[in-house]
Length: 127
Image 1 (tube, rainbow, N blue to C red):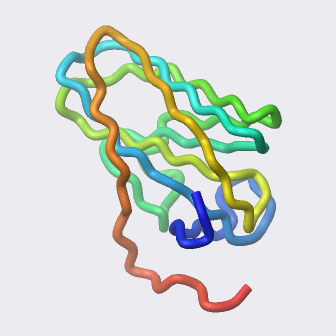
Image 2 (cartoon, one colour):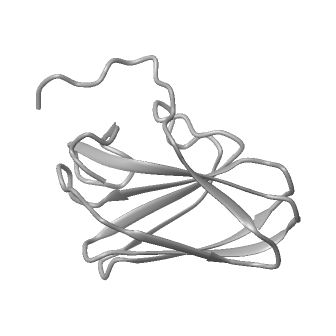
C-alpha cells in the first residue's frame, strides 16, 4: 500500500491519524473453512468482512480482526459459496507505506481481487 491508497481515519483500536489501507475481495464456489495469512515487515492490522465493506462504518459486517507486531496475520473464516468477503489490511501506525503478501488455503479455489470501496465523504485534504 502506498500514499495513493485510500485512507481510513482512526480505525478502531489504532492510534489517531490517517491509515492507508488495501482491500481484497474474496469469493469461492464451495462453502467451507478457509485460512488466510498475511505477512509483512511492520506492525500490521487486518479486518475481515462478510457481504460488504464500508470505510465509513468500520464495525458493520466485520467478522474478525487481527493485529501483529511481527507482521503476521491469520484468519480462519467459514465462507459461503458465491458470497463476497473483504480482507482489509492497514498498519498500526498512521502514514506508513507497506508491502505485504496474502496467502490462502482451503478445499476450493478462492478468487481474490483488489477492491476499491466507494465513499460519500471526500478524502481529507490536510493532516
